[in-house]
Each structure stands twice: as structure tokens, then as C-alpha cells.
Length: 439
Image 1: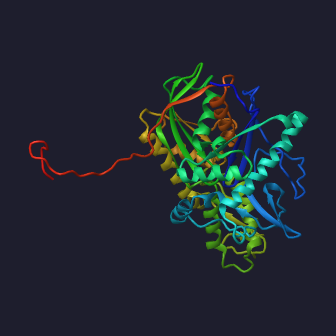
Image 2: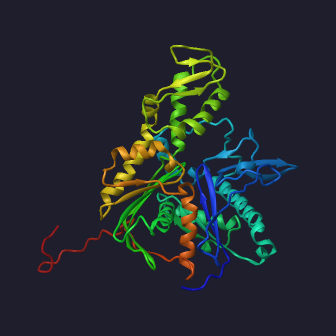
């Protein structure tokens, strides 16, 4: 191992709905920090409130013929913005999503791509905004010493992304100012999550020869990977027991199908409009989705301002009653696809898994936890580790440090399961006495 040439390692978890950043100084690689301060207005002021992530959204502010990107939480509340553009970076993935689940959740603030603006261009602008923001936050930590420091970037991407998409991400990152494409490290999201789980749990919960499934359930994708532990100390040595795999069935699709449910039930009511739908979806996103654990006896009241009382539909005083059974039946397609992905890992694993670790935003859902617990064999434990929402960024940062420097916790993936097999079909003339049979 060679000593680090960079001073700061920055890991970017670019998500479908939210993005996060972890960083560490090479002089103290054990200390992984999460950026929690973000621009709160167009002027770029850092707000008093803190958050582990910022929305993966971008808008364009046209001022004196200049086009200025506005991003994340600094976008004004009612300003049109581009959302979920990560899904457009892999067109075949978006096509698959539309074929298997329901169309996008309708947000009246969502805009189409401006003329001649592509998903790659939006990614460049968004990554550039992150790249400019990072030094502003770290300046408070290092002062003027930051001016002489250099940065090493690592970006986590879905397991299902083809090599072409990974290469395009590197190219976009280079154009965004993150350094040369060849210097930018790409790591799969489930592997980054697995590194976080292993390094956080290896002192207590994990043992040599344990096999674990890591399920990174995010906003857009759910990615899984399975590792067997070969050694814990002094070097964490792993081997893949099943190749990483992923699907477009993340938490955003719960919103999609719930909106579809509401539109089918209430769309013909007088007074139903985007404002009514927006209020209902905000309640679902902030309260209902986060508290529902699958109890079919638990009912919910969804605000539907502007709709008159209707006893037959369950509308009373601008609230719509949704039973737990209705909610469970509605959300089941997303849960079933996630379960199928985890069970496939269990079936394909060369060793019997001991645990399934749930990370990511959707991975913190009590509904997903209880649903998986219901169907996964009881001898396999299900664990939602600490810092699960920031696991990708933390794990990617740890892995980049481990690949670069002796002082960092060393992590080695000694063997992997092949993702693809290559061969050629050939035919040669039959030789009597040499070949056994003529085809």
C-alpha cells in the first residue's frame, strides 16, 4: 500500500430522491463525517437546520440571459424543478420501470427537460453544485489550510447499472470538476453499504464464516449483495457469495402507487385538483408511509382539502379514511419485488446467510422490515443498523480510504461472482479419425 497523496476523501451518494456526502481526512481515516449543512435559498446561504441529505432536484434560474442552476433545498418551494433524473441515466431501466410498476408520482412542480438539456447535462450541473458546496462546509473545519488540500472523489452507483452508465458517470463527474475521470472511483451501492455494515458490526455481531445479505433499499432502486467473511482482523477479508443485483422498486414507487390509488378513488370528485393531491401526498410521505408497519387494523386519515363530505367514499371534514388493509393491498407490489430480490440472493448464495441488513431510506421503513420478517426464513435475522440512511456514503468513504492508505481500516474483497460470461461459437471441418462425431 502507498501513502495517500490526497488530503480529503469525499464519497457521494447520488440518490434518486436524496443525495448525501461523507468525507474523511487522510490523517484521521477512522473519523467519517457527514455533511449536514446545505444551501437554503437561491443566494446560497447555509440554513440553521441540518439534514443528512439534500433533495436530488435541480432547477434553472434565468437571470439577465444567464442560466444559473439551482439545486437541492435552495430551490424555492413552488419553483418548477427536475426530479428523479437519476433514472433517466439508464434509459432501459426507465423503460423497465414503466413496464413493471406504475408511472411517476405526479408533482405539479416537476418540469420537463429544457430544450437541448439531457439527463447527463443535469447530472453534470448537480455534481458541480455539490463540488462547489463541499469546500464551503469544510472551510469551517480547516480554515485557510483547506486551500492547499486536494480531494479524492468516490461515487456510489446502483448494482444494476451497466458498465456504460458507470463510464458516463465518471465522464460527467470529470466535466463537473471532480477531477480526471480515471481518478474518480466508482463503487456499487450495495458493496458500499456492505462495507459500512461490516466495519460497524465486526467487533460484536459478526464472526468469521458468517454470510450476510445487505439490502440497500433507496428511493429509486433496491440493491442487494451477499458476502461471506473470511477474516475480521487485522484485515477485513470478504468474498462474494452471490453477485450484486438490483431493481427499480425503491421507496418512491410507494408514492407512485398510492397516488394512483387516490386518483382512482377520488379523481372524479368535485374539487379534486393538484392542490388536493399535493396535500394528500405530503401526508403520505411525511406521516403515513413512515409509521405504517403493515397492521391491517390501523386506519389513517389523509387530508383532502377542497372535497365535500361523502359518507360512501369515506370523506369527512376534508379527511379521507384509508384502512390498513387498503393501504397494505395498495403497496404490496413494491414490497413483493423487494422480497423477491432478497430471496434471490438467499437462493443463489453459496453459503446459507445468517442475517439480512437493511440500509437506505426505504430500508428504515417499518413496513418493509415487518414484511420481510414475515416471509424470510426465521433462522435468518433481519437487522436495520445504526446510520442506515447514510450507510452508502459512509461505506464508500471507508472503502476508498482502505484502497489507498495503510492507516485506514483495510478491506479486501478477495473473490467475486462473475457478472457475465463470454464465449464464441465456432465450427471447423470434420476430420475422420480425429473427431468422434460429425455434426
